[in-house]
Amino acid sequence: MLTEVRCKNAVCPPDKKRLRLTDTAGLYLEVSPAGSKRWFWKTYTDGKEGRLALGSYPDVTLKSVRLARDAAKRDRAAGIDLVQARKIARLKSAVATDDTFKATALEWYGKNEARWSSHYAIREKRNLEKDLFPYFAERHVGEIEPIELLAALRRVEERGALDVASRVLQTARAVWRYAVATARASRDITADLKGALTPHKKRHFAAITDPKRVGELIRVIRGYQGGVIVRTALQLAPLLFQRPNELRGAAWVEIDLDAALWTVPAARMKRRIDGKENGDPHVVPLPTQAVELLRNLHPVTGHGVLVFPGERSHERPISDNTLRAALLTLGYGPTVQTVHGFRATARTLLAEVLEVDPLVIEAQLAHAVKDPNGRAYNRTQYVKQRTVMMQRWADYLDKLAARNLTRLSKKAA
Image 1 (cartoon, rainbow, N blue to C red):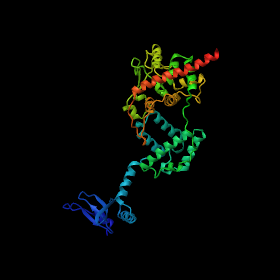
Image 2: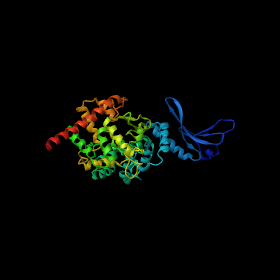
Image 3: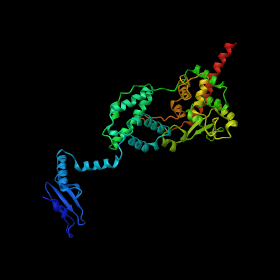
Image 4: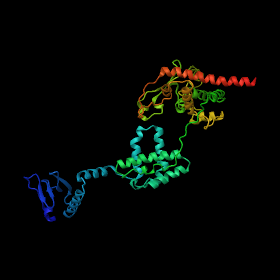
């Protein structure tokens, strides 16, 4: 058996690669010619000799290393792979430098922000800062209980924001999964909250789909008495049925009136960050009615960059609320018809009344067509077919509006 004195005085002869001094039960001290001294425990697996490093002398004393050897023997008898357990411990110590909820969440956010759209990134950050950090910021993420997270989500529900509560739970779930992956938490506690939140009905953008009422709406829009910029945008909204942000942010450089095409850059489309950076632009065929509206507007805003510049700054487009407010002044509130709802209006009537191929409609809506497994597979833009469809749609809206005018004239007579 070794003694502290022998360990302290041990020297490797210069003619040897190493000196091994054995203790008991497979423990030995290995001394190098350079003078370093390391503890090892000899093991056998399937008849093959191996060894487990237990530290360096004198940092690890003889008494301490014997206790470490005995603990390793117990773990091995329990079926624990000591080498693998050591590797996992090293990985954990290298990854989990700060295991507070806030540090974990911000690290997760930083690793994912680059692949998110700006809108999604802002929403995720808001979920953290408004509804999670106030309660858990400095808590160790692995010590937070499911009931505590549920209490925080209940506070969101109490605001009447049931849909927000669900999104906050999704954010929390992503953080906890990252915490598990980085050894900060042993499990994802959000799994325990399945079914615990108050169900909410998904709200769709209000849209009129009855042809008669659509005709009345188009007629009212054409009678709008506001400024020419808003009036033109309001008339183009149902005619082209693009997303409100894409319409109001249109630039003259995107529009070719002679070719009757509006080419929306990928960066302005509602896509993931990769689609914005590397995707194709969205081409919108313009019916003759849209070309005429834009030609009439060009003398007013064509000297600038934007088709629909705001009143306060010509470098910014009209605001989100501008068209919404215009519809409201015409008697169409958000529960009756929204600007975004014109997309549903067009989708419904094009399919059910004009019997247009759904794939062509989806291409005009800039929707990714998916296969049964949820993967986008159709890259066809159907520009030729959409050109025909858009003219049919514009002519159809004219007929619906004229039909209502005819009825009004007969009543007046």
